Image (cartoon, rainbow, N blue to C red; front, side, top):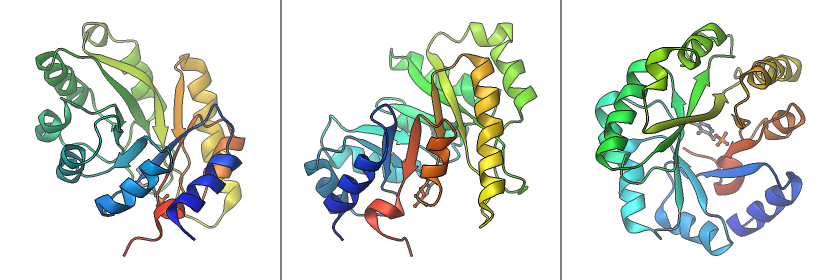
Length: 212
Ligand SMILES: *Cc1c(COP(=O)(O)O)cnc(C)c1O
């Protein structure tokens, strides 16, 4: 099936209030242009250099989301144009984003990444750490970032019940924070994530085909 057709089917299957981030990592610009021609404007990348190169070459009204782990020393490269940073998992990264956003005279929207998977390899903060960031005095002083929500990745497992429970726990915590964006769900689990309250899904292979 074509990218256009995949996008149509997925867009039609998710509620209008859920934002679809088309994850284009590793895929060539031609694929992104095809999705763009079909009306898609929000794209997600997980590598800073790749995102910078694509943003330079592609239409300026694309909203670029950085979805992967972000190293502090690379924030400066995306600060001029990034639309949303999904994977913030430390206060020091948040401070660096604030510093670089200030240089650009803009406010950068961020999501804190919550650790919900049982695997030890996943990045992220536990709920207590998120609460302490949101409640800290130091956080209030960061005028050039805005934490608009949370992001989470479920365990890489066939066990749908486990994935559902992980999404559920994140949604419950999210509701207490009064934030507005909950980024959870990928190609394999976005329907489940939406059932559990996701407001933003990050879908790659179901749109662009599998990655090698
Ligand atoms: C690659 C990636 C996705 C998309 O994965 P698919 O399974 O291809 O949909 C979503 N979120 C993050 C953080 C990713 O790195």
